[in-house]
Image (cartoon, rainbow, N blue to C red; front, side):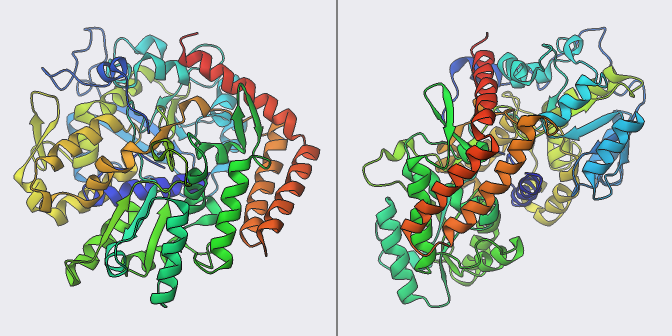
Amino acid sequence: MKEMKKLLMSSIMALLVSAVVLSGCSKGNGTNSSEESTNTPSTKTSETAAPESAFELGTTPVQFTFYGNYDWYTMPPWGNDLATAWIKENKKVNITPVQSGGDAATKYNMMIASNELPDVMWMERGPDVEKLREAGMLVSFDEYLDKYPNLKKWLGEDGINMLRSEDGKLYQFPNWYTGQPNGNAGYVINKKIYTELGSPALETTDDLYNYLKLVKEKYKNVVPFEVGLAAQGDGLDVLFSAFGEDYSVRYLGMRAVPKDDTLTSLFTDPVFRESMQYSNKLFREKLMTQDAMNQTADQVKEKVLNGRVAVFAGASPTKYADPGNAILKKDDPEAGYFMIWPIHKAGLDKNKIWPGTYNQLGWNVSVITKAAKDPEAIFAFLDWLTGPEGQSVSMWGPPGLYWDGFDTEGSPNFTEKYSSDNEGRDKLMAAITDFQWAGNTVFVDKSKAKFEMSLPEDKRSWATEQQTTITWKTQSDATQFVNLDPLPESEEGIIWKQLDDLFKEVRAKALLAKSEADVISILDKAEADAQSMGYSKLQSFMTDKWQNNLKKMNGN
C-alpha cells in the first residue's frame, strides 16, 4: 500500500504541475444536499471568524517537529520556498522535519519503544494510529473543533465521526478528504490510432477486444492495451469493474466481496473470476502489455508520452496522458489522447460501472502526540492549512503572486500571472507539493474547475476536462469500507498478511495462465489455501468493522 500511496502523491504532483489537482494516493456518486451545504464555504468570506478564546496564528510563534511515516517521504526544509517562507513570516510557524531515513517501520517502532515521539506524525489511518492511541500517546482534538471551524465545516460531522477511534474521540486530521466524487481511474484512448481505425464503438468488453485485435494487426510497434503497474492492480483493477454492476474496485483491496451483510470470498466471486479470465485472454493473445507484472513507472511513462499505446487503463492514467497529450499535439494537432466512458460487459448498465473509488476521509492523516508542548496551536495551524487561505497558499503560493484574495463565492481570484507564468507557477507548485498535509479536495477542485471552465475551450486543461466530463462522474464512494484492516500483530493481522501475499501471487499466476480453464483452477486452489490460513475468521473480523462503519455513517 505504501507504494500505491507514493504513486498517489506523485500523481497529485504531476497533475498540479499541469494546473490540475489529483486527490489521491485518492482513492462516483453525487453529494446530497446536506453534504453540499457542509462542504461549501460561505459566500461572504473566505474564512469563518474564530472565537475570541482561540489561538490566533501570527501573534505567537509556533514551533513543532513533523515526521512523515513513509519510506519514500523526505520533508524538504521549511521556509526555503515562497509558500512556506510566507507562512513562517506571516503566521510565525516554523516546522522541523524528522526523517524516516528510508525505513519508516523501524523508525516508527523505535520512536514508540523509546517514547521519543515527534510533535506531529503524518501516516496511514488504521492500525498504526490505533497503536499510538492505545499507548496513550495521542492528543484528542474534540475540544478544538468548535474553536477552529474549518475542519468541521469542510469535512462535516459524518466524516468526523468516521475518523473517531473506539473510545469515541477524534485523534486524526485527514488529508485530501472530500464531500464529492474525485479521482482519475478509467480508460485513455490514443486519438490518432482510433481515428485511423475508423472510430469504432468502444463501449463493451467485446468492443474492446475487437478493437485491440485491430490495433495489433495494424500497428506493430504499439501496445494495444497498456495496464500500467499491474502488480499493484492499476489497469487490472479497472478491468475488474467492467464485469459487475455497482462493483467497487475497493473489493480487490479488501480481498473480499460484500454479499448482503457479510464479506465473502473474492476467489470464488463470479465477477472476479470472469475479469481474470478476460485479462488472461488479452495477455495470452498479446493484446496486453507483456511485461505488465514487472515493468516500472518510467517504462509506462515513456510509452504513453511517445504515443506507443492504443488504450491505457489505470488508477490514474491522466498522470502520463496529460503531458503525453500535449507532446503529441505539438507534432500533430489531430493527435493526442481522450478518455471514454468506462467499458462494461454487454447487458450491464454502463452507468453502474465504477473503475475507481474515492472516500470521504481521503488519503492519510496527521496526529498530534503528547510530546507537543502546545497541541492547540498545532491544531490551529492544521485547521488554517485546510481552510481557504491555507489551501491557496499551500497549492499556489503566497497571496499576490498567482492568486490574490477571494471572490464572493469564496474561490481564490487567480491573477494574470497564473496563466502567463506557467514555468514559474509549475516550479513553485512542484516545490510545495510535499507540504500538502491537510488537503481539502472540495475547495481545491471547485476552485480549479471554476477557473478552467471560465477559459476558452482551447485554453482549458486537458486533465480538468477529462475529470469534469468523465472520471469524477464514474468513481464510486467507498467510505463504508475504510479502516477494516486488523492490527498487524493480532491473529487476524497475521492472517491478513498471508492472504495479501497469496492474492498478489495468485493474480499474477492467473494472468499468465495457459488457458481460461487454468485460471479457474488457480482460483479454486487459492480459495482452499486461503481457507486453511483462516480466511473465514478474517472475513468475520472485517465484516464487524464494516458494519460498524455503516452504523457510524447512519449516525448510530
